[in-house]
Image (cartoon, rainbow, N blue to C red; front, top):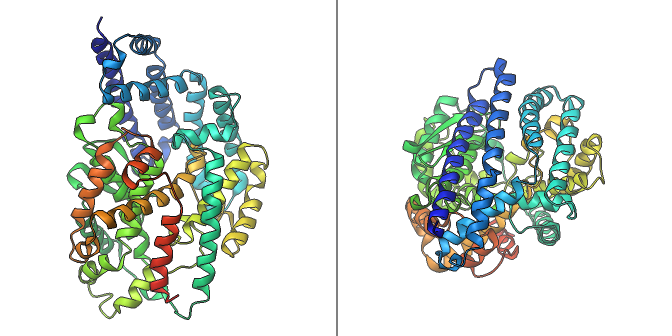
Length: 503
């Protein structure tokens, strides 16, 4: 059998696994949005079964034999760069999957479905003790998972690599120390500014139907394709669904805070655009996926903050905003509005944090995860540690666990190592902006004129179309000319907020 025939068999097996994951994506989306409460246990069984099938497909001995034959072939070097990249990515996943017992995969899936339901109840009732035993079980499962993958490696480093290939604690510690210190320095300057910002002026009541109309306007402007997606409501905004031509985003509505839904749609829209614009030529191949969670976050936060909170965007969108909100904000001054949506104010809730303080929320979670997985703290101690660090980093007191350690859903699924990719995405995005400014010097003028499409097309070419052709640090270097570097994010934040706060 020729190496090309072997390669084609690998791709066919991967295609079938991708289809299964698309089904799982649809089931998971429904779980978060439309599933009746009574179906939690039933849905948990469905999701566990799909996870079992996916694991079996990922660990099929035939796949391992095919990979061995391809990699050991004298003709291996004759494969194209894309074909070798596909084989490398399949091998990477296969080696990880074959080390994890299927019983562990099924157990995690079942626990996750239950933990999400318990977490929602615990959050609603401010009851950490209700959630605590489920989180303890999930932490233990993820430690077992890390041990199976690499018993010699620090368990948190193993988990970090799941979400951002090539990243480890040493790199995060270095990047985050610089980011933390630079962020706190900027916050102190802002706190000493004479400029007063009144965020309350944008807190008028805006009904959900009016906000839905506003979201339609926003989606149209940023270029998320509703012909290949949906916008629905979820307790915690996310992007999901099958993928490719069916990429679904969600938001939540607060009638006294339109900005919550507006910027979550901009954020999830950025995720959705990434998924919608991976090159069609790469579909059903390993290279046809986003290269990492950090890269995904670079796109969501690029649209949310760099574009949709910028002065240029609102020069264009402000009249549409007033029209869509049916006169509610007709008397609103533009400069006061711009400062209000960019206000820097320490907050308790991560998803509502401004782009300056946001990274401190992430660093807090990273440090808790790191110490939790390495047995430096216990699950029962998380609320106390969380509250203490929030006071230290953000200067505010947490009054209930619902607004503290229970605010995020991520740990329900064992996603330890995911949180740091949020700030990594901010770092990547600022480096991309630096490159965009060089290659498209008039980009801000384009935004002022409502031409978001030009920036989206630039991102399509540089990031989205590349799929998983490169590991994240390599893609950053290809686009920006160097590996991840915090200075561009700090420069962006200092420049923007020095102007807004007259520093």
